[in-house]
Length: 228
Image 1 (cartoon, helix red, strand yellow):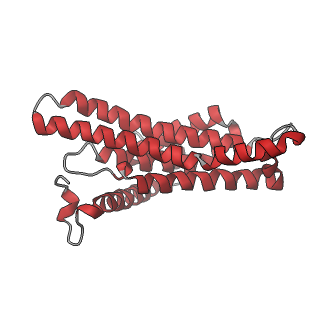
Image 2: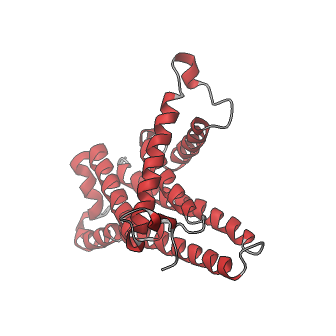
Image 3: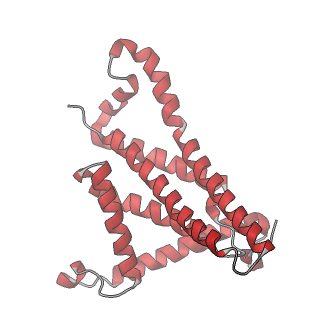
């Protein structure tokens, strides 16, 4: 394995590089969230947009973006899920972007992390579905026509249980490929040539965070939809 900066941390070898990266990002995001929360102020000051570039401004930008996306995918009821989606998007994006830094192993190229995130999304949308619709949520696994339930049930179960795998494999494989391509060009020509690949890599980081969050929104939308 190539050199990683996290391997310089005592007790952290190459095999724990991804764990160290996700730990650093998690700690940084918790700190950023605390700073953004304390900078809100009180009263009218708390609802005024940030006047300049700051951590609070970045958090507000991400929250507004996710809130608008939730309105389109889920409807106005989707606003209550914005904290979940915004956290998911920010966590994935920041871990993806770490791969753009030479010598840093992005945690999202590790299938163990991405599969855990896929399972987390799976648990959350099923929980939200049960919370919103109660026991009636389980009826959608039987399909719209009850006599065909014996056919629809295994299809729906397989369709749902494969979602964590599809989410995790898509994110891990794309980020691993992106990181590998960037690393190859950095080794060949470290100056000048890699710049377009850096820009492409940053774009891929945003797209993959967006796709994972968007699919999670779709799953929540399907799970929380009411029968009419």
